[in-house]
Each structure stands twice: as structure tokens, then as C-alpha cells.
Image (cartoon, rainbow, N blue to C red; front, side):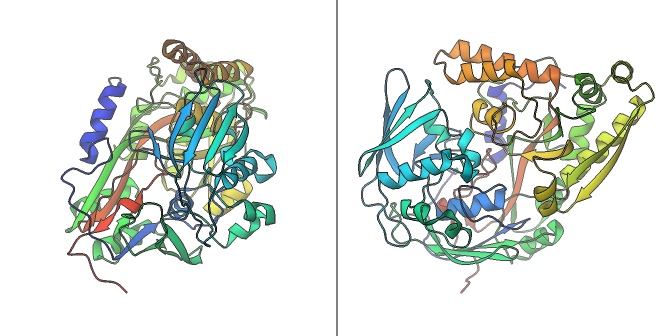
Amino acid sequence: MPSIHRRDFLAASAALSGLALSGVPAFAQTPRRGGTLRVSVDQAVSKLNPLVTRVNPEYLVAELLYSNLTRLKPDMSAEPDLAESWTNSADLTEWTFALRKGLSFHDGSPCTAADVVATFEAILDAKTASPARQNVGPIAKVVAKDDATVVFSLSAPFADLPVTLAYTNAKIVPAAVIKGGLQKLDREAVGTGPFKLVSFEPERQIVVARNDAYYDKARPYLDRIEILVFPDVSAEASALIAGDTDLISTTPPTEFGRLQKASGVKALRVPSGQFCNVNFGCDQKPFNDVRVRQALALTVDRAAMVDFVTEGFGSPGNDTPLNPAYRFYADLPAKKADIAKAKALLAEAGYPKGLEATLIASDRPGQRTQLAVALREMAKPAGFDIKVETMPHATYLDQVWKKGSFYVGFYNMQATADAIFSLLYTSNAAWNETRWNNAAFDKVVFEARATVDEAKRRALYAEAQKLMNAEVPSIIPAFFDLLGAQREWVEGYQLHPRGAVFRLDHVSLGANAPKRG
């Protein structure tokens, strides 16, 4: 398969989505105000506290209820949210953010620089266990210059700060709530977002209503949004086709064909850096031996994996989390299946008669199990005897995620190369699932983070990708196009390549939308 370059990828993204990369829908009309939008998701919204959300449905709800200092546009650049503007020092170690005037939380209390400071102090506190801790950048100190001005002092130069402050778990919460205990946010929402919480039933339905005190008086356009949980993806698609729901935030390839053919339904697709991977516990036998990891990677037919796991709605991976969607993607030689070499490596590692292992996959999304089964079959000729164990997603999160030594992960695209590396693969990563803990990798990633020079950053990120490609802390065989669907009366919605960004405050309903109480 020919290699795909970033410019081609972005062009394909625009073509597939049918929308400009600026985020403005083609042929946009003046949005109509009012109405209720029904959005379906495929798993429970178990976490309401925005600092610790973990999966897309939780990110969706948090985005409706809370705000960041900045927001992520579809082209992965930052735009103002609670901060209306920002400036930086010449050496990129100090950033000053000016807040909008008259901000308020849903309980009526003012939102000021003190709340921003308290939020980031909570994020940076390891006890909070926020994934944002390692993903908002090298923040050393945050201070309030006055009620409307926040100054971030960094431990190293960092050009990506406005983008990383849009991270899913960096939403601003009241200082008073933090002082009283963040457990309050497990069942309540006290944000500044475009919608306010009406009801919260994690396994069934979450309802939000327009926040009339939102800083943008034009948005949101909708009166109300109902988020409905459909554990059965077939039933979820049927509900959209019947017009019982209006929007599916994400749908598997198995349902996409049916949605494409349905009357009154608009199927949505956009290329992305989203991927499934096979995580190795690099600190435990047998996967602490790099030869075992390399051997298994050499059993993978990546073109076939794209067909099998993504149903053709994706592109091959090369055992790094970057693809052409990322600015600093390195076009390394593509790995090809080599069973003879895989057998030889396995024998060198002390397994001449093969190796048995249990590969665990959550049942959400279904592509995890598909990937596990495909790998099991591809690896057999090389001597790998893999047993696939599928479990409910909630059980997986509690018992396997960040604890297991051989399991299938699923990750959204991040806004920057640094963000995805710091989320998953550096030794201090928020989700250091592989425990690879490679000092050379850490060094080049940290150097790139602190480097302003474009060419030097590109070279450093290329070296990081080469290290991953060679040592295989996880197998990344394929990247997914993002798939979703909406009724034709939904206006202003765009699938976001990041996967965890939704921007539903830009959505409105056409005149032909059903009237709901």
C-alpha cells in the first residue's frame, strides 16, 4: 500500500467529511434556535467529574457542562474558550491568558482566575489522578495576576500550551468545590459550559438544558440535549434509522453500511489518528524480552488487519501512535509480515516450541475483539498460541486497564505528538500501560517538547518513532477513520478527528426536525 503523507491525509479528511477544515460546515445556514437533540452513545457515562473522565461518552457530557481555557478546532489548532486571548514570553516559558469578563458557574458563582489556578493545582496533584496531569504541558506554577488574568510559568519552553490546555480533562471547576472535595462532582455538575445538568442516570440517560448565562449569547442553539445509552450497537443504529434519535457520536464499521443506505440518514466519516493496539507489559515475562514483542509484530499482515478490523475504513499502522494526521509524523519503512523471522526471534528468546498467552479485549468497541481474534490467527504459524478473552468494558477498566500485561487498547487521536507520547508511552505517562520506561525515548520526547526549532523538533520526534517501531512496546496495526451518523435535520455537526471533541453547542435542528417536549 503506498504511503500516505500529511497533506494528502488532510485533503482526504476534508473530502470525506464534506466540510472545510476550518470547522465551518459547507453551505451553512443561519442556525435555528430551540429544540431537543437526542444523541446516542454505546457505553455508560460512569464518570461525571471532568478531571477524571476516561471514555468518549464521558468526554461528550463533560464538554457540554464545562469549559476549558481553550478549545480544539477540527484542524487541531486552539481557539478561545474561557480565555479570550493569550500571549507568551519570547522563550516560551511564560504564558499569560486573559479571561472573558462576567464568567459564571452554573450555581451562579463567578468564575475567575482563582478558579483556574485551583483547577490546575488539582490537576497537577497526583492524588487527583487526572490524565491531564501529564498532558497539559510542563507547567511549574499557575498564578492569578488579577481576577481576569492567569499566568502559567513553565519548567521548559513549550510551544503547544494553548493546544494542550484544550485537553479533555483540563476543564475549569470552582475553587470552592475543590476545597470542599471533588467527590461533589461525582453526581453534580458545576461548570461554565453551554449546558446545565438536568438529570444523570449513568447507564441509561443524561439530560442537559441550555445555560442561559453562557458567555456566548448566540450559542448554544439547542434548548436541550438527551444523551441515550445503547449498549447494543445494532439497536443504536435502528433507533437512528427510525428517527427516535438524531445523532450517533460513533458507530462501528459493521453498522456503517446499513446507515449509509438508510433514508433520511447522513453517514459521517473522517480520517483520524484513532487506533487500537496490543499493549505489552514490558516489565513482565515473556514480554520483557524485546524479541518476543518483535516476533509477534512480525506476524501481522497490516493490510489484512485494516480490512478485517476497520472494514476498510482505515489505514495501516507501523507500531507508533503517529500517522499522517500528525504534524511530526515520520514516514518509516512499513513493517511486513515475516513468519520465518518471527519464529527465529521466538526461538532466540527461549521459546523454540512456541509460546502461550492470554490476550484480553474489552467488548467496547467491538473492534477490540476483532483485532484480538485476527492477531490470534495471524500469529499461529509463528508458534504463538493465543487465547482471546473478551470481557465487559466496565470489568476491563477495573481489572485490566493499566494493570494487565497483554491486552487490546483503544485510543483517540491527540492534538499533538507530545500529547499522545505523554499520555501512553513516556515513563511518567498518565496511562503508562506498557511500562516500557525507555530512557532514550523519554529523553528525545522531552527535548522535542522544549524545542522551538521546527527542524530539530521533527528530527527528535522521528527518533522517538524509530525507537518505538524497533522495540514495540505495543503493536499498532491499524488506524481508524471515525464513523458516525445523523438525521438529515441535524445541522452544524462535524465529526472531529480527535474523536473526543464534539462541539454540540454549534449544532441546531432544521425545520423538519421532530418536535419533542
